[in-house]
Length: 452
Image 1 (cartoon, one colour):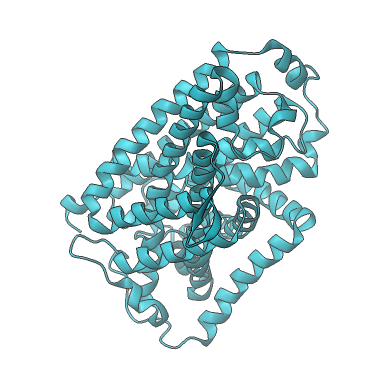
Image 2 (image 1 turned 180 degrees about the vertical axis):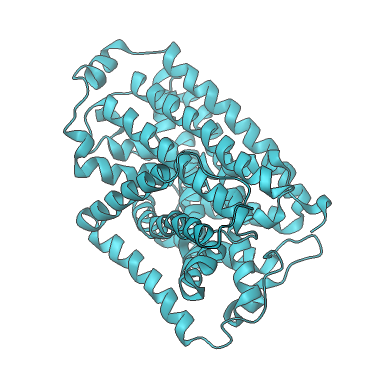
């Protein structure tokens, strides 16, 4: 791929940040306080999420510089475990891995927008429809068209919208410290650290929401074959983007808890709007709520960029998805973008925000954990062949990947115990991918252009 059509380090980092800062951080707190009563537990939750994400980003950075090419887990797992497991990972990415988070972000955007304007329903073709759904659908359609038109225009939009997002999140963080409510902080933090909460089922279930909010720390690995100087820029973009987001997430949730009583936000999706309304009143708070909804545009756009690269990579290797491998002369996978957006549209129309989060959280965590475990396999092969030619190496090996895997195992275990329906449906989707691979003809038709 020519340098002109490659993503720079700045764009790759902005794609990571944009994938991460989205619906999750502005909605998760309302669900976390349903089971957790201490502000310290919430802060530790977000710190742990950031630390684990940094561990994962370091592991992915090493794997991505070893196993070159776009496609993320599909590319990695195919080369580490074989085509069947890789296909299953790609199948999950194709069906729900990106389409569902895009839908969740669109739903959150619509919720923030409609509640900020105090409009709940509209009539479409004589039928009463939730305005939040209408806004979500239109946001998806507009951003899909934008990314279909031009890779260069899409990258410019991504850089501008994400830079604006970082600045605005920093401003919102500062508001919490300026307008701190001491009565609220006494209730939220007065009991000190509740050690029993840190090992409770509610804590690990809350990690699903946190892992969703942090999801995207591996985003640049999905477009690895389209990044300038990938050996240096993939690790830099992953670690830099994840580090920026971790700091912002901890400060943002602390700011929310310095102003808002837990009772007012329990089960609420639009915590950011409630926060701004509490400080400035309905009119200005509503305007800030609108701005927060616009922030989600960057997240949706970045996922529309990264997801289709997996589908395209699958199409180059498997006859079943060959139709989706076609791209324009500027390397825009238009067909893959269209099918992903169609699946997102179905999720928007049929699903709630919470059900989407638990479902995709369990499913994606399985393949993320398998990918990190693959680093042990790659290192073992190095030892066997006495290879020392690889570039980036993760800090703290083998402790860092081992801790990452251990925490994910706890999350998956509690997910199975506390949310068995969503967990088993997600597991069933993964197994279905293996079955489809086993029965499909023309399993491998060509070698991906991006792969070595």
